[in-house]
Length: 329
Length: 266
Image: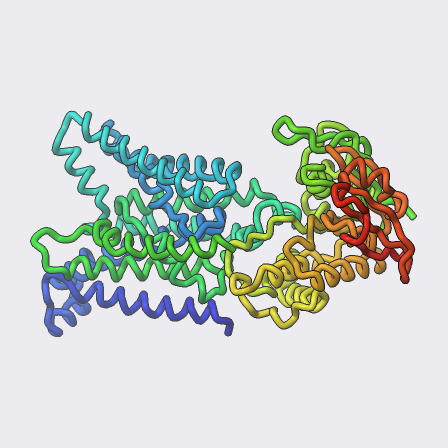
């Protein structure tokens, strides 16, 4: 058995273990009798907590993490840049901006309007990044451009709050933007899962192209790779996965950056074989992060997005340091 | 013998600057043709035009008789393999995987076999499982050349394949390219080193300001008159032990002797 598939099995095993912990542990502590009751009697109180509160929360964290890990891996491969990530480059912030605008403009009542807005926002930012990267080769310039997109989307979101007529609605949106999988239901899981799976299928189609792109666009083109098709597949996969993640859980940073980084050496750098392990690593990270955020004894529960940013930002600095050395090749 | 690569009256501009100006170039199967010229003369542009990467504003580039712009990317890749000047590899892939990128349409096992054979050809077989980020610049250049060789396309385009290599590695690269030409491939390579061009090329294309100044066997292309006009060098061919040698020097040195010599198997 080859190394990456063993990696996949190990990650899948860890996800199962982390998910079990995520369902069994929480603010309310159950003893063994209550836990067995939850398995035996679906109408009981413990069953309600385990299967209707915690399980969908864990499943949402898994799907959002997988979506972000996949997006990060696709963007890093397409842009040939280890610092690319939907959070860093403003794709998440643009999705959040579009979703916040939809909510404040009163579109939240229409089913799916917020979700579609998030997808469009993510797609627009992804398209801008791809246009920029097609014209500018420098990896540093692309990061600066992405930071500009991210800052602009953040400022525009702040403007929406600023001009919002209802402070309560604004506070709700702000709370959602901080990033959380608290109180998510099976309904959320039911729509986010197919979106992530579809994004995964699109990414899988792009995988051979991402590998060829390791030597740059011109070499890939002269080896017979149609770049336009690859860009479209990668853009759709990224926009779908990031848009879905932001729509269901708000902005959660750094998972898309860290997940590919954690598994890259195990696939020996291959950006095509990186996709599945990166998605699994992202899912695992977010299930664990959500569990840790829940178990941290604070008066107000720690927001998942806040928690990942606190852990992720130092990691980003470390990756930037190492990447800067590699760019001197 | 029919010409495999042909360029007729090609014009091209990059950002308002003329990089090809009425260029005519022919490369036949079995020939190694070297493109030489000062910096900015249009060497890379000429090679990129054959690879289909530089759109022409006039003239035509044909691969085996077909206009390159009418061929699909797959069809172009089947006829020409291209080694670009820039050698950045984004990820720390093992050398054998980089070489296998030259044959993306083969199955996994076949691609690995072709990749290992190509690495052996450039004396880099021992590097096969090493990550390219852990290699020296010269080792990485060999791996990238192996990628271009792995394809076994009928034509091979190489833009400055000897840049940054040790002298013995430069000779090794040109020996390999020469062997590929002898085996029937049409090889077009840009070189900075006139001595290497004089020694290995069947024909030399001298470029200057986008124009082809000379397109002939080394002895006829690198004449003292062309060397003076294009490179500002005083040069002459001298009789060496293994054939004619190109000897050149700067005018300011007074005497055109000794600074650069290479033999040409006439």
